[in-house]
Image (cartoon, rainbow, N blue to C red):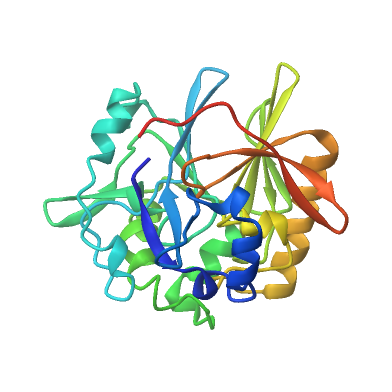
Length: 287
């Protein structure tokens, strides 16, 4: 984990929600995801380490240290000790073989690069960095796309994506899926961003799906039609969320979002047209 804390008022973070519902489902939402006294959502930034077929794979790289984020100051000029915690987990930068950025947002690509001799350079020099081509092109400011999250992601492409591309380490993949190996598959689930990707994992009969920002809070599991304030295509985000949650509920797949604080992963069940918590995962990642 890189960071955790209070992020934003819940009705700003998930604008279609209301305090009454947060109160009604406080059994799920407090205290790990909602601070009732302040009305703020709790969140965290996480990187997941997956070892598969002899390779070390990172899923998302958080916000990074020392980044200039004038319109999202909570993630600006951080000094978190993240790399030391990654080393304590047995991962050195040179050990990483693959970096999967579930999407190109400020809090998912930050540790792609580090500042060295006043230049942003790739943190993981031996890795291939995987981006969906849809997101890579959408967030490249030279392409001139209108973007809902333009200001909160200010500087992000230039300091955390472009240097990886210029170093020849970026792979912008196309299509609906990409097979990393026999255990891991990338699958597009667009809406939050045009190229949001989930990572499906299957090994020894067990399955999980790392969903990035398909959901920011369990309130979006309980009410999957409620988008976050950062979703670029609202209708598509709803469709993708429902599709992945339906599959997870029907197939008993562990759902691992990027920002769930406290309890970090969940099994879900159907609840009429919505979904509900079946059980939290019986683990807590390293902090």
